[in-house]
Image (cartoon, rainbow, N blue to C red; front, side, top):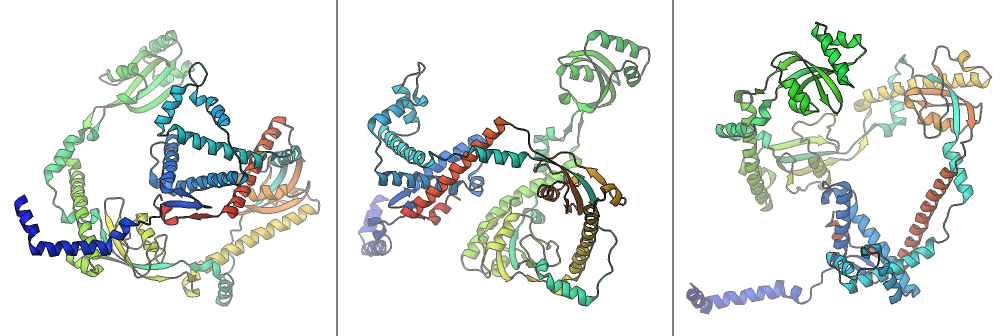
Length: 619
């Protein structure tokens, strides 16, 4: 074989082929290898770059921290949706900005300061409390750092902290500010409410001219969303089952393998009476022996009967209870049984033995499952064939014909999955990924092959788009009439509430003007204590706290309105601890505001450029 290859390589034909190959390398690839120009900086801060590898290490550290705090179910996709890549980059850019500012200011961190910081770090303290050199080296090794790298990082961190402290040093909320916030948050008010429900008597319908004018005046309320016309090829396993002939033996194998799933455990319907001591339980058993019924005997001594319902052996909280209950061959009473909970007397009222669901009862479903698994496997291969067809230049129609696939045509669908009549178009997948793709693919273009969560695939073409527009009067007439009626009913309720408010302002009492409407005293409440169900809606609370004592206000409450008379205003009880807590909170918020302004100023000074394409690889 090798001899043949050497002879072939020596022929004139092989030499020509090698020459062509060398020319192709020269034309297409050699330049890239000799002078690569790969931009691997996720961000450029001033003249400093944040490389992809540096960002990747920091991102991995933060991602692992998220998983530790939030659980192992956090995936890179979830982290991207929650904005972790952007958050990590923002923090990294801020650190670099402060480092550059420290350099500009000429801040120096001496070796002695670095040494003291390391020696005082509790992470490097031994069991006797002093600095442990061996532990220090092990920690660095675990984190993949050399001593030089760690010292350089620590030096930068110390200089950053010096800059940050200089900015934040004198930022603290005043005592008077904290007291004012405390008064605002905890002020107490009381009111008397009259609830005015929405009117129920429908007004007389307007003429068409009036309704048209109302439609014109409220055009923005009758906007139709953007609609897209879509053609799609769907590879849906559930719609592929008629093309699959599953071996019936597969259903039998699945049944045998999952026999526990088709086994209904034995149950007993149980009632129990629980006692603190054995003597009382024995007395109760003696009463039952005379023929007394469980509930009657328990009632005679003031004991409670608990109905546990049908329970399996595993559902009983203690093994001793399960043994006592399931040892009875027929309905009856057993006990007393001692457990850590006390002494139990148990009545078994009904017995259901273990039952295995016959294969014939689940055969159809198991055969469908087996067929579906085969369909999913076949569709994976078919999806590759479809991708190859479309990648080779075939149209949707040609690819569908070649592979014997049906086309799905959707004349109009909006981003919520509704057609112009507000219905879900027939055949539209419920998978959110389909609609996202339909509204992110440019008009006239094909999407990439997408996956459905149930093991299916799809590819779609956006045929056209109808942009958002005001619905014409004839199309929107039912909606217009309904909205017009709601507005009239709301106006009627508001007018009634305003009329009641005027009477109250004249000095009349709520009870004398209510006229059958509900009147209630709210009791004391703060700005954050709304109770919509009782008429004290958020709008009512806001209006009451904007008014003076004795003032009457009207605000929306649910479907109607509430008329409120401010009945009392009380200052909050003094709390030194709460005032100090508020002061600390305000100080922390002020520090964060100053820090953000400082970072924004540094960004203007040094400049920041983000490589969005490289960052997108982490999303």
